[in-house]
Length: 440
Image 1 (cartoon, rainbow, N blue to C red):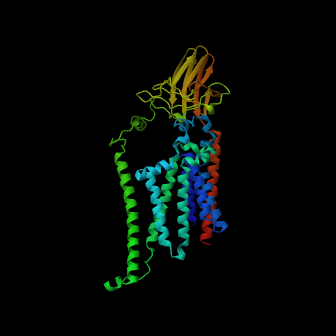
Image 2 (cartoon, rainbow, N blue to C red):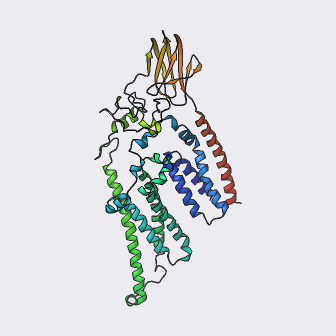
Image 3 (cartoon, rainbow, N blue to C red):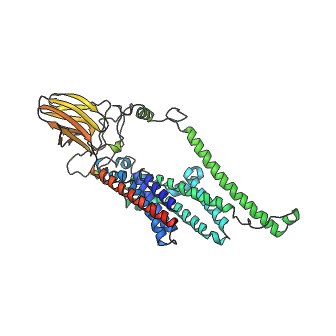
């Protein structure tokens, strides 16, 4: 049990390092699922299992806390607004049902129903397996709930929490259905060994086959074989779908039978990650301010437009809130004034150069104004400004300057590191406690 709890904690820690809105949905779903399954367990067992989740989140706090506390500095809402709104991604179940089983999602939902039916029949008549039937019901009910959550009927629920809408499309919830489908499949396969008629003796000769008892045994054996065929057919169908999809999907070094629109970007990232011809995706660029006091949440976002080379069209901003970076922008621009610049270092977390200003100079750096960047002039920390396109800019009077721009730990990141360190200590202590209870 100690090993299982430690493993569950680490799984939650890894989940916390993934897509945050999807992670939040998983948290809600797992909490409800765990409370239902553990409802008859002693309180100490329930507490020890439920404690694993927040402990895992604590381990990932160095990522989670900055992701939550610092998202106001970037244009994170572009993921949602540029897709015509979250409501458009909700599924019309009536329309989907009329289309038949052509959609892979529908086939998986039906597969869950088939697995649950096989498990229910297999465990019927076995009082000792009543808990397995209860688990099957809980899993199937969870699938039904998730399907309804992806439907248009669930829009009032999604409206209650706009943060969860940042998964961009409700169908992403379907990934949890696949996980539950795997659990139902395992339970269904387990139930085949207990299928009705398994405990009865087989006929010893041909004459016994024609007796009522023999016919009943053969009939039950037939249904057990039919159930096994159904399980096998579903697994083979899923394998065929995955194989076909994989064959159609191109890769970096093999084009396959598909076309990757952003393949040049991927190749550039892999082969030349520090290229001056790379840009941030729209949602990770800084959020610009237009008119002071304007309600930017009411702004109607539009999809960013790109030129044939793949860079944003400078004239097509997204409601004035989104920077449009261009290729080969110089690292340092003297927007106003006269002077000379010589770069000494331009690494990932430190940029250093000398500046000789003959007049008052407005200097713009090819660094987005994210929290964490600190400017030093001759060793003295100086506040910076945000240029119109989101880059860092600063003003200097005539003179000679040794300029350093260093990326430092933000308060949110420091808080996350402290929470993660504390969680490690708690996990070590609980691991010792769990193991001492297992081996007194």
